Image (tube, rainbow over all chains, first blue to last red; front, side, top):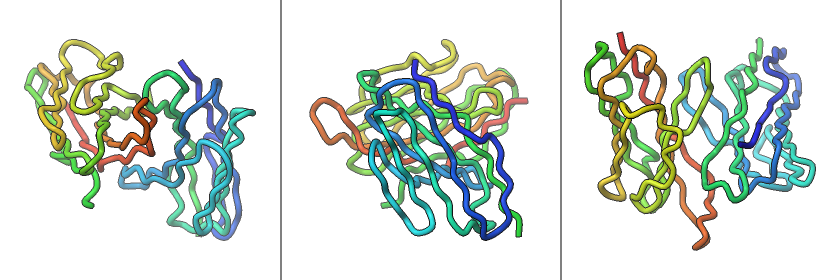
Length: 110
Length: 118
């Protein structure tokens, strides 16, 4: 099956700093989503981005499908950004299943 | 819309007991997914349905696990008998297709059920 690798695995930021999270995948995909799992365990949709660039407030994401990677940018980080960020992909011709990466655990310090 | 609804939110049971987890997908969504999250294995798909029909159950760990979707607004995941290694957070998610070939929009996740088997 498809492999999804996220980096870095852990990240500590000072409030106000910017960061870039990376997701590499090993095969062509139909669908790519970024999620934020908050400290209460809820998986919150951030972006549905099989290709191109999207922005939502302080967050933006870019997927370069031909090179099999996606980036999530967090600008002016806040303590509420803390949690785990997951990238999940739906492989071409492999059904509608999402395969999740291992996540990036982010801690933003005040 | 209320989003994906799961119940119970927490379940504590003893080894050997039957456990039933419930899910109500977002209205109008024709795909429903059950995932499990553990520290060791991360988030993994167990089974998914399209129009109430199971499509792929290759992620179901063993025969003790079963899932049903009797109608478009309700699904259950049952574990019988439960074992301590089944302790995990179980998520239900739903999505909507936009082509007849099954391409789907993004998946939306419920709040999860935290299962503890002692």
